[in-house]
Length: 144
Length: 473
Image (cartoon, rainbow over all chains, first blue to last red; front, top):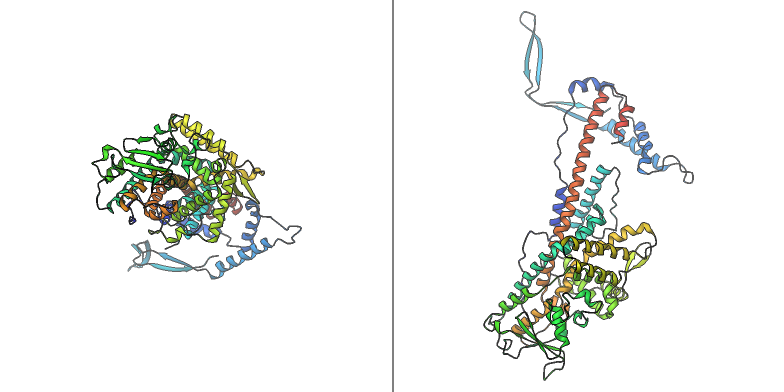
């Protein structure tokens, strides 16, 4: 009988499931634009107005919206106290505690930031000079 | 590199994420209802699951119409090319490419038992019977004048001892009574005088070109018979015949699932006890004319032969492409409605109808392969085998044919599959594109709203006022 040799096939290769899956997965990749920074003067003044994080407040907000997802709000008569709500509070408390007590914020000021400095001149009069930072400045911060 | 099952889950995960962005809370469930979420290489089954979850019934119907109308011509061309290349490979195994004198117009001819080219017992069905009308094409009053080789051959067999000419290529005579070593029910075949000085490859190419392989109505009817046994139960196919067909379908399934590998494993031709049991069950169900629908209980589903004859009649009387598409669409909707007639809970009907269309897509390759395994294609192969390997060379059954021509069959299935995948992938990608675009817009809007909210917190707007905006994003 004739030896069965593989036959060349025509066209674009859509034969492997991996190839097809890669095509489909690539259809989901959309490049995203980076978000623009908020105005620094507003942060400087506005940050002081913020109240800070509250785990109880966050848990309360989530629980109040439970019904949006179709979950029962409050105690169910037959099942006793709502265990899921208690669990929500514990979960949020742990997350918020971790953020408040252990999270760390590193702030980097890039080189080239324009600065204005005031010093005392030879005659005792103030001298204003202008320039730019030449190295990166690194600062620490915490989340409140 | 991730395995196919991980990538498949990732695709459904991405869709769920995009839907969460566009529609709010997640609605897509990654459950066992998606049978294709496995490591198998069956891309058609995965894509039909994907379209089913992304869009639904109408998109699947439209894909079936597209495959059965626009793609079938291309598939026919691809399959014919594959057949010609394979026949040429067989011819190259022989010493002399010329036609031997005994097959030429004045020779004794090649004798082939009808049963050796008719593995699926098609030639036992009268083209003018209710089942025959669905499986044959171009059923002319005088069957030997048909342009369909299967119909022509049936006509030849009805006229014992009379010689008929196929398109100036072959003369064929049916002899019900054998003489000497020639068995009963044999076809004696000679090439016509045109080929006395031509090569076997010329004869093969001209014969393949003279064939009409696939017709929309025949393919859809075959598919409905594979799923529901609509024709088999009416014409009384035996359980043994149907088990044989289930075995062939099992081999096709295994070959399609192994498309990722270049070599076809020997395991494609052997079956476990569970697989054999499933084949027996399929055969029994087709014999009864039912398929089972798995809801809370198993419910028998049927598509009566009358809905196939109505569809065929409507399609054959349609002239324009729009009319043909409408006839297919109406036929599919009618069959889908019939398939849910035993479902009592109306909530289940949409999903069962959706599965009905998905089953058609998943079984189209099998419907096309049934035609490849019909006398019109086997005829040419057996002639070549007898010329090259001698008078006794033959195929014992369809499985033997597939085994001895497994690269051809694999190649044909891949070409068919590629066409179907092209259509399904285009539908899926179009919908994914729409979904992703919506998600991007939603995300940008969300980012803008959040930025505004953040700015408002910095100028002292009360947090409860801001929450009213952000909670409804």
